[in-house]
Length: 135
Ligand code: NI
Image (tube, rainbow, N blue to C red; front, side):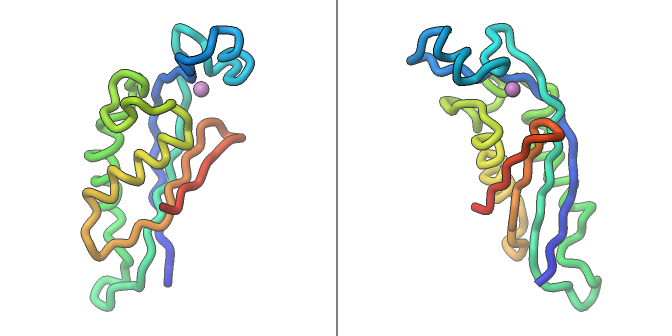
């Protein structure tokens, strides 16, 4: 089994705010991410697929194709967007990096060819913070 990773970059705005809590509690829990007028992050997205190399190509999957699917089906919807209001698959969810990684996984699953096994979505919110989702 071999693992293949494609790295992509995007920028997006969001706000972490639980409407059931008052402003003070939101600030306490979410800090700067609760800023009422939004704020942005430079996200780094690592998409890892796994499998055996195809005997004809030596590839697990065509990495150029993988990049195209990520860009067309995911980045198109989230890059330079407001994650809370612009992104259909984040509707009704807290806009955390955790939920975003799960959302990206679910979107990609719909568009990857059947024979490609998605292994991990790793998403950096800052150079010091990332989440990993394995499905
Ligand atoms: Ni934030």
